[in-house]
Image (tube, rainbow, N blue to C red; front, side, top):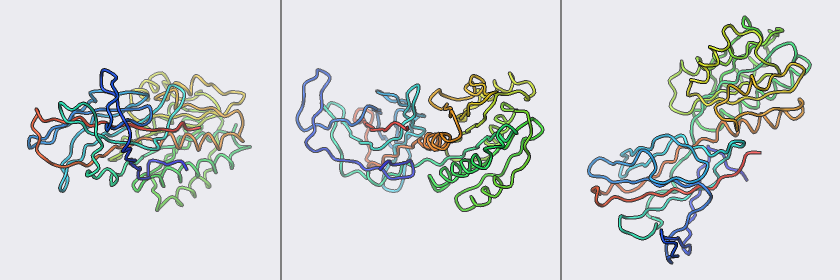
Length: 334
């Protein structure tokens, strides 16, 4: 069963594994890695817990935000936020991770089973805006599209305790409407807003609507990851100053996804131009294949992780520093 960001991860102790030193000599009793992705950080505690903000070593298709050390009750949390795994064409879900440590001067990494690895939670709260094309070209499929939108919203708000979703409905530039943000406890209200929307117009102000979503996310104080998912079956033909708007969209640090539905006036390049990474862009050939694409994009939206490793708060001066190695297994979203 696939595990999402809201689940606790299982650390497996590989007591009989081996590892290789720098000269490729296999050393019995050392811990090996799992998966294709790896991060190694340096850590010491001279009274102020300190971890290298960037990894000393990394491997695989992994992106991350700067790491930090945070004192907690009877320990120190080593935190690596914003962890994503993706290639140029695919996003991935993390299914398992493993943490080992190596003292300065030691030959290889050893699993430290006295540390509370298995009590760490890796869920990341998500604030997402769904930018939803409601132009007249979609009216034949509008009820189906609304159902997919509601499924997406429910999936995100149920992914972690504080995740939240808003919707920007749009067609022409005078028909852009934003909702409030809703959580798992209020999601029925968003369902009603989606069901009751009726303002369908002919043109498509895609960039103006996406910029509205960016501004909406910028207006909230949120401790988590922010993302936009834009859906359309056309291209932008009604935004004022579209080049300027696109520059502002691309300049935002919000994670941006896009879903297209092929049709007579679909403009792939226009929609593709707004995404953060090409792996965040998907196109459906028909309405029947759109449901799975909405589902997979939702999985991509929530597949961002905060690795939080709790270790002892023992004092270690800079000459007693340890290396902390995080290895990761992941599964392609498809």
